[in-house]
Image (cartoon, rainbow over all chains, first blue to last red):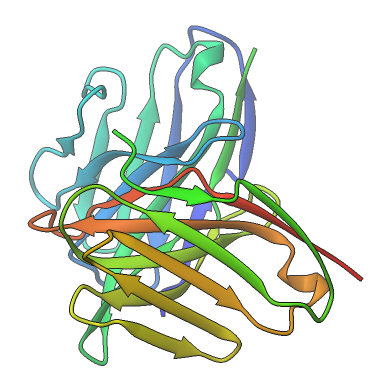
Length: 116
Length: 112
């Protein structure tokens, strides 16, 4: 499996400010993703964090709002910029590991964000 | 767009009973995965079934996949109160390169 930690675990922020979420993995991984889970909803993929190049964003998500860094194969950050109450969600990073020939996606514990 | 759709949306059963949850999807897939989430915390990977597999077991879990009907079911046998959680199916579409599309989730309550 993969041990994934996220910081902070939760935060309460004022609208208009930005928050950077960190994701640390205990081993090198190729594929790393960022998801958002709005209250009572399912998970939606924000972007694929690419090591050494710009992240690949899904429809409806843009780099200016959710800049992502991936400086190496064990670490990534997601910034939620110019926050509004609609950004209140749980943000989760995930990684793909291949074990026994099977790809499995593991998720971090999530960062619970409340924007006032 | 939402790929997986689970039903029922909520399920309440007595401890010891079996719980069956269904998931339908729309496009061709590489695999389908089931996850559990306790009280808004991180997701725990339960089981993965590939598109060329029809049934898979893991402990008290049994998952089936019918690609002709684009549907899957997750059966939890002999349920326990600790199984109370939200369950999500997620599909990796063909060519999606590990990206997952999640269903809306099923809330399972197991009464002790």
